[in-house]
Amino acid sequence: MNGLIALLLAFAALGAADKLLGGRLGVAEEFDRGLAAMGGLCCSMSGIYCAAVTVLPGMAQALGALGLPFDPSLPAGMLLAVDMGGWAAADALAAGPALAVYSGLLVASTLGCLVSFSLPVALGSLPGREVPGYMQGVLWGVIALPAGLAAGGLAAGLAPGALAANLWPVAALCAVLAACLRLCPRVCVGALHVLGEAVRWLGILLFCAMVLGVFWPGAAFVPPEVVSEALVIVLRITAVVCGSQVAGRIAMARGGRWIAAAARRLGTNEYGVLGLMVSAVSSVSMLPLYGRMDVRGKVLNAAFTVAGSFVLGGQLAFVTSVAGGRAVAAYFVCKLLAGALAAALAVKFTSNNPRPAPGVRETGGKTT
Image (tube, rainbow, N blue to C red):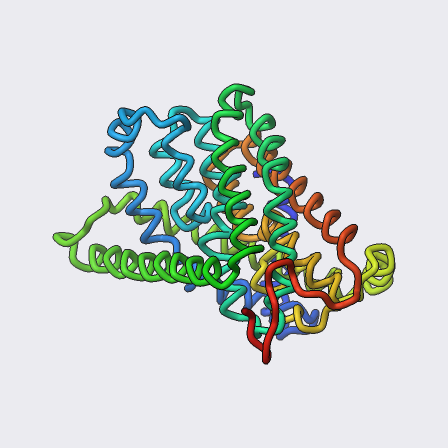
């Protein structure tokens, strides 16, 4: 267990203690919110994880025979979030441990999470008038992503030649995604919505199949030990999310002066800074604050979301559950570097004069 996880678990213990005290410390509600995440995590993640661990290892040899110019694990990481099958699939398909970390932890926690989770959820939650600013931020985040992946891959121990061979497909997809968001945003948004919904439906159906196998062993499609492994991962994630929620609440309650100072330095309002803080735990928690941010704050938060979201939340708990210290360090290098670079680009090139994102125009409250 690393020091950060231990600290977050201490905050989780503080939240549990506050529940025993009847909420006198003011953090019991945040602890409950973390606990409430367990059901959704289990439903969306556990079935896909079990299926990937069970089915995909048999496909590794067949994919290797195709002679792909990159590792077979890379497409899974580019399309699936790390805790929604990205790691399990990449670990089963990768040619080596370092490539599994690169595809299944670094790519899947950034680009895969953006494609299969963050972008579909945000576009489904935000009103149409907010979409242009959000898309502009996503553009900066996608542009910054290859630099973070390169640094993270080197930190994970990937040889420069192997890194180059597996970085160019990600950079190419980032370029295509950025071009689509700029030139044909409606088509791109629609395609990402379809992908996000497909992943959501698949997760629910596989969860139901997993539960059926628990109660009716003859119908089980995965061994019981794999189900137990998936549920332990969900439990670990939930405990860390509880601690993150409590820590965030304390930071926002006690750090008003520092938040105001950071807001002045970034040239945004305080809600823009609060959004960054909660996004580091969960980008979903940032969305309710989005409408109260100024223009720069909105673009800044959307840019940071591409790589920096979940860096201290459920993804961190998942990564520490399945990988060792060097992989965790590479995870931090990748996500924090790409997130910081995206935020810097957003601050430099965004003012508080409302402008639509390039290629996106707003008509009657709807994005066109």
